[in-house]
Image (cartoon, chains in turn blue, cyan):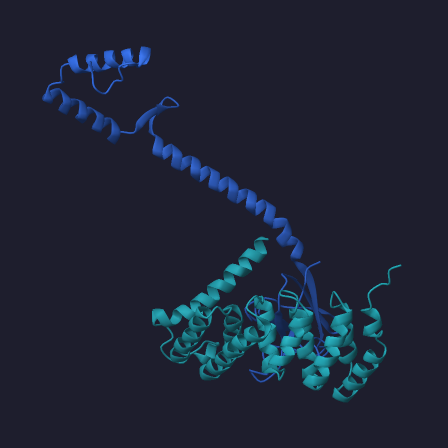
Length: 178
Length: 210
């Protein structure tokens, strides 16, 4: 009788005794066999390849691919959801200045990196009024006009930017969306 | 959408090239002739922008100042001085308007301070316009001051209007009224506009309940 099994354990105690006896009688595996089993188990652990879709692939690759697909899907959904909101915030802003004697007028501002070639204005022949229209996002936009490539000027009634850092004022607008 | 992306890419590319010129060792001599900036000034500008962004200030208004100066063929040292002053003004504007202010608000606030508006007057603008909604009112305040109205008078008038006005439409009407003439006419227009306003105390009176 084993000391660790209660004497009055009933059926469960009997089963436990049988299992212990069976285990005690089982011969130990030879050392060489244990080494081979361990080597085989190690090889399986190091080789996570499985067959999937009829091809031998690594599950880690499948996982990475699935994660990538999910990320792309989430990104596409996010962009599709965000785009209408951003587009809705864009407003078309008209610009106009009277310069009947100018041969060309350019609109420059922080929306076109102050590039005099970016936004040439169109002249209305009858009035000498120059116009342009830009789609601008909400924000503070500072701008001016360049007449004939050399004279910087502003629309006198437009809001002024305030500072005269570079010698002359600019004008400013703050579109807030449609 | 594509146009906007193209413009954004062009802007980033220009600003990057401008500041990367220092790192690349380009522009060794003054290139003022074609609207560029000398290397020494570019180094200083880069340091100013880096310092500003390290302190959490928006870089875009500073890059815009650099690009504007370059487009106007302003000498590099002058651009450096302007950008340095503007960076300081951005910091001062953030102190006045609060850390949750948006970049357009800080930009407008910096320009306002540079035109003579006091920090206390920006604080008053913030008191009547929450975070993200004060840029227009600050632009209007700056415009009024630029047209010869004293900062106190402009600030008082605008604050009074903004308390009646939820969407800036009345403030824009005030600005439009003032913008029609010279400084003297602007003051008269401002006074008339304010006289025609409803009494704010009546407007703000809560509805009576039975």
